[in-house]
Length: 384
Image 1 (tube, one colour):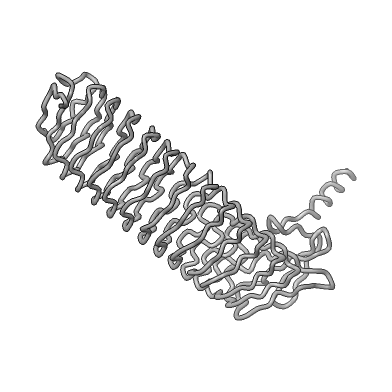
Image 2 (cartoon, rainbow, N blue to C red):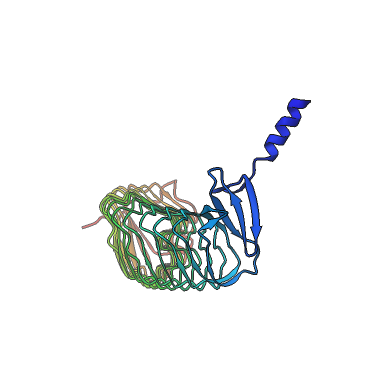
């Protein structure tokens, strides 16, 4: 019984306030709440949402340094000065501080947690300390007025959604030391016009530029192998992009609704193109498919209104459902004799299309609704 009581008392003394804030004693004083760390330093919190205006974080409490900023989220602060004793800005530390316009972060800070400045909608610029190596997930997401930011040269990783919905961000330089950029890092950056991704980047997430409606210039790394899902989706101003010869796969919806995209050369190294990769690219007039491509997947070119002609690779095996549906400008297409499967509605509502088939008659693997719209078909076609 005594042993059980001892264990319960021991557990009661252990409390984790945040991932960075392990306490031994806590103190409250006016606007701030302090938690003593195991090393004798302190983490600092706001006592409630009513904190407002310009604040200066104290450097010490009870003679010991304040080293961690934990939770000022949702307060009405407008500016913050952080002392050089601080080394860590914890997860969500200033999240939702919609009135925050400026913040001074000293070089002593080596860690900024995920979502630390998320939805700081008045923040226009920020200087990131040179010792930071990771821009964590959601760290600046929703900072809709952020227009100027410099990423330190020591940063090696940019987390998922790090700059998502930074709608005023027009340009950003990514240092050469960065090796990975997470999913949706720049998604919804509606003012972003151009960006260069360094060649050292080997990990690129999906939806990276999804909804970047002003993006016109992109330089991709020369060693990337996968263009992820929705990578350029809804980049409505993008007219073209040079794809590297290292590329092997284009993900689902990668260029979906890139309505200004007029032409694209896909390198022969690409072996797979995902569902809807070019769907609703209404300005696409010409595209060169890789010779090693075996399948045209579901709705890959659906609603590509301006596409007039496309050459299918000689080794193509399958054309999946709705692959070319609503391509109203498509006038002719040659289906190689190697194609054994065509899905339903593959050419639905292609009102100007004549289909030339190298096969002498319809193969058994072609769906009965493959030509549901009744496009004219020429069997036994031979290329000159």
